[in-house]
Image (cartoon, rainbow, N blue to C red; front, side):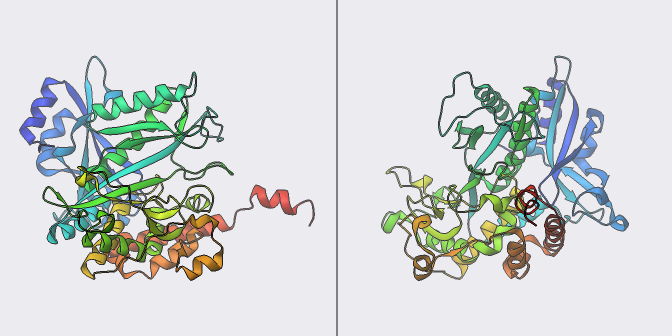
Length: 443
């Protein structure tokens, strides 16, 4: 996508009668934040940024160091279709956060990803990702009541969700976000819209917009969309499988026509790095208590640390190579869920993979059996370990990880660990309906 200049943006604003611009950024937990400025402030914002109080943003700053500067990224300028009217338009731009001194703010998740991508660039690589985000439509936000009883790829008659998906895709395309395809997922009222692969920073911005657009379109249709990983017991949860590859210029560094499975040594070492550090990165890619209700055997959620070519019970799947599609050679990391912070999730996956390349990790043989059907002893003999079983276990592993601390930076790392421990403490004190049903009648 061609770079946008300040003068080009000012020209678009004048021609399209843009009156307001939303300046967007993301907090450490992955929630979209922002504020609106009028068109009169735009030129100054593009030159010097806009000041705001960062002390109220999760993980940003303490009260005594609250002043922050949001500098809009001109390349992210786009008109918001659902906020625009016949009389005027509303636009948006993602921002990089700076300290008043002019230094990049190390607590900004966008900066974290930029820093990790710069490390990849030093090694000659550009990092591309293509996430598949699943989500549910419910009648409201108070209870998980599905809109349909459809299943995988079903074309449900009179399904309101078909119109919801169509309107969502049209809005995404209007924002310049390329969509590959959409379909009904396995569970009732569960859906998926897949974005065409892009370099990781643009894709992280697009994931944030995707979640906003899905929810906004649902709201306008009088229903509720959620990216909660496991809202209903007994059916599949929602994942965010992340297809990823490294390029050197226009060449896919993951492809080698002479090697087995057409995977280059770079790809094999990258994959080995992801597998080796998968337990450490799980707290970032599956960051909520509820995330671990999805990561259980039997619901297509990968919990076993291994790789395979066609086996969807493996943590990493290698999509089948098609002749003439060398640039499509990639790996698919299947444990993340769609409620994670994409800037941090892409960062830790990249860091793990790059360490595999730098230290020349060796990739073992693929797991071709259905791992769900293997017994515990059989998996142990095969050297197949499991992802953390709950948020507490995941955080304890992440807390000891030098790789994750370096990838996130000390400020984000310490805040994230502290926040997740607080979440676990709140969760473990709850008296659940399960306990009431099981114990109250007998104890």
